[in-house]
Image 1 (cartoon, helix red, strand yellow):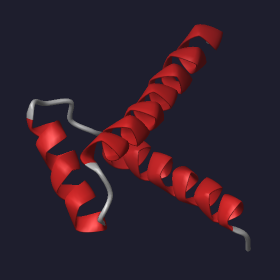
Image 2 (image 1 turned 90 degrees about the vertical axis):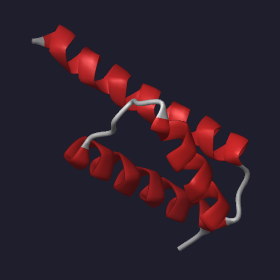
Image 3 (image 1 turned 180 degrees about the vertical axis):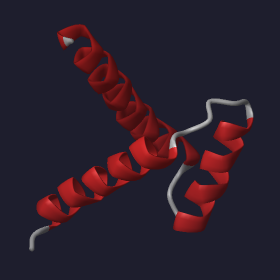
Image 4 (image 1 turned 90 degrees about the horizontal axis):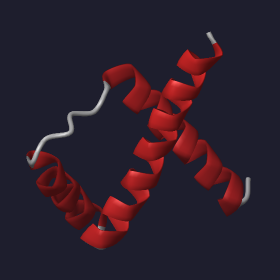
Length: 69
């Protein structure tokens, strides 16, 4: 399995988990992201940018589904 496919699968798993468990959009979220980024050895800004993309995709997906009904 190549790195691109692993990245695709990782995004799918993350989206599944966020759909299932939800995400709380609170002021503490950025601190949680920063702590997670530090644990993973990546920059806070990069983690925030990535999660913003994922969350926006989930929001778009949710509202696109409701518009089709």
